[in-house]
Amino acid sequence: MNSYLKVDHVSKSFTRGTVVTEVLKDISLDIGKGEFVSIIGHSGCGKSTLLNLIAGLTKVSDGGVLLENREVDEPGPERAVVFQNHSLLPWLTVYENVKLAVDKVFRESRSRAERHDWIMQNLALVQMQHAKDKRPAEISGGMKQRVGLARALAMEPKILLLDEPFGALDALTRAHLQDSVMDIHARLGNTMVMITHDVDEAVLLSDRVVMMTNGPAAKIGEILEVNLARPRRRLELVADRSYVQYRESVLKFLYERHRFVEAA
Ligand SMILES: Nc1ncnc2c1ncn2[C@@H]1O[C@H](COP(=O)(O)OP(=O)(O)O)[C@@H](O)[C@H]1O
Ligand SMILES: [Mg+2]
Image (cartoon, rainbow, N blue to C red; front, side, top):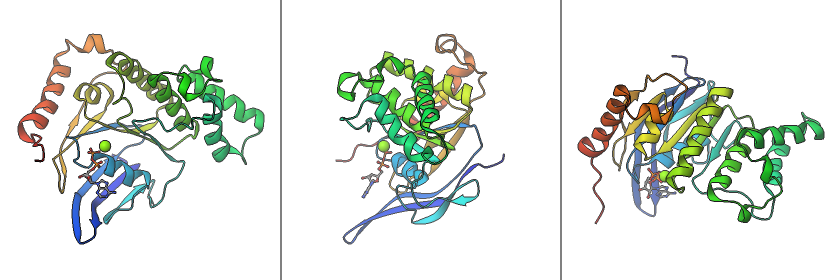
């Protein structure tokens, strides 16, 4: 596989005073262009740490992250992140929140009219044009995540990083957003890396599910290839034999082989 994003023998430790915590140990992962990869693991195993390393928000302790053969060591618009809790600016409207990102990336290369069209196009992609003049406090949690997604997509990132983007939403809203993300992925063919702890979400959306062992010094335990035809429809998949088997193998990894032990 051509590796578009390469996580190459990455380890990460945090040092606080004299205490060193080894969070990730020797993680290697190659992701192809246009691939949808989920990373699943128990709480605290180091998923967000891994995503932050790919985003360039944190520096590796050892190894390297390469995007198109170029080393990642700082944040950049070609690696946009959507977090679990939307990070919209409360005093700006939906439109202005997306505009901020668009202006930052395209101020030089696109005219004002082109930027306006591009903002509207991205709001349309997440079905949020109707709420363009609302402020974050006036819209629901699901809508805020949609705007966060539009803002990330509007930067035309090479890779979209999603850190439990639907984790704080109720089940129905989450299902709607998952469908939107699948639809966007099908239309735009972006490369996406999503952190989740939801087994159904991982199997439904991904080409591959990367399963992490528990920390400290978490590693990649197994990688599951999900060979289900797209477009995928959740209702049809519920009874699909392969879907059920994929789901079972992730569940077995998480709840039999790498059971979560809550710290005392
Ligand atoms: N900035 C930091 N300083 C010290 N420890 C950290 C820092 N960030 C994360 N950790 C530790 O790394 C571990 C993994 O955290 P995290 O990546 O957030 O896990 P996950 O996203 O899988 O729930 C946790 O034990 C956490 O306390
Ligand atoms: Mg996390």
